[in-house]
Length: 179
Ligand code: IMP
Ligand code: MG
Image 1 (spheres, rainbow, N blue to C red):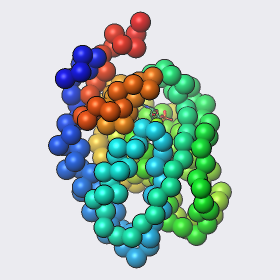
Image 2: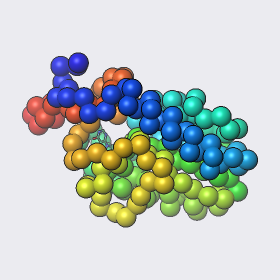
Image 3: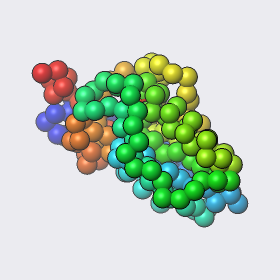
């Protein structure tokens, strides 16, 4: 285990099983709809690439980058778009793929912004949900795991851009961010 990790919260095997079942569910719900899956950079890249590999229906992908955090472990409530989609989403079935919902600011901003572009539908698929921390009302339509109020890294999730490459999701030692 990495020296900065307190303990593993969700192992790579547990993640793989859950991702496969989310993919099966999406295959059923979006049969014949050719959905557009949007990867929210950077935290969602591993979840996104595993999820789409498990899906079998025809689909398209695009990428968007949003920032709400700066480099800290707490949300600023301030959301900024860093990279927009390449193509129009008009009349498309859009699925936002996000790593984690925390305060909810990022996704509520994103959902509002995407809806203004006249898609056919917008749903949210989030790997992790820290529901205790919610400040704005927003829920995932598809969800991997509910987790408690702990700062986690790995499987795409970072602290100050580090730890994204760890294959399991682990709780970061407090000493790393409480200096
Ligand atoms: P929200 O706008 O507060 O919902 O923040 C969502 C974003 O905060 C996520 O996309 C992550 O980038 C980041 N985030 C929230 N909690 C964690 C965590 O425990 N580990 C790593 N990133 C987190
Ligand atoms: Mg993120």
